[in-house]
Amino acid sequence: RCVACFLSFRQPYAGLVLDGVKTVESRWRPVLAPLENQTLAVHVAWRDWEGEEWRAVLGGPLGMNRVQMEALLESGERWGRGVVAGLVDVGQTWLCPASLQGEELSRLEQAAVLIGLQEKHLTHLSNPRWLKEPLSVRGGGDLFSVEIPVHLLP
Image (cartoon, rainbow, N blue to C red; front, side, top):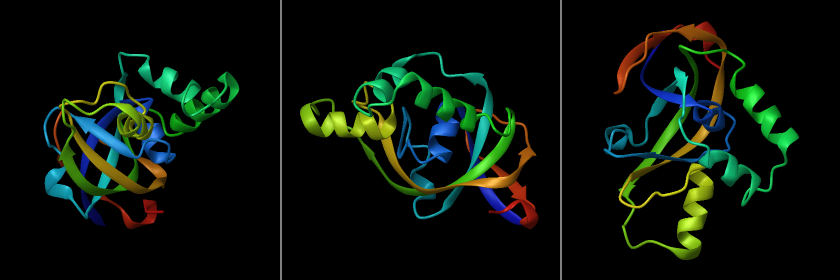
């Protein structure tokens, strides 16, 4: 068994993280800072993200058409909801300055697949990988610990 911390992500962001499209996570608090250089288990929340900003970023700066977006959303739903679906490595966390704008802000918004990152804590994510099968676990708002059986590891 592998013990890892997990954090719930609403869809479509859980799938976007595990498919390597979302490489920067944004939170109002520095939740992931203690996990720098560690592996995080990605839990797929039951609820969807309430905004549509991700569509604007995928279709605009990332240049995806509707068919590509639908395929990406379908991929993100492969294990359903309420499960730990994969793993991602956690990098550095930093506070995005309120004054950030222009090309650097656009680059970060593309990596986060979200608009309006100023004054949020941003964390680099890398090396995403799906588990071989989902692990049903109850999620929540903060970090939790989970034991992942070795046979589920990618």
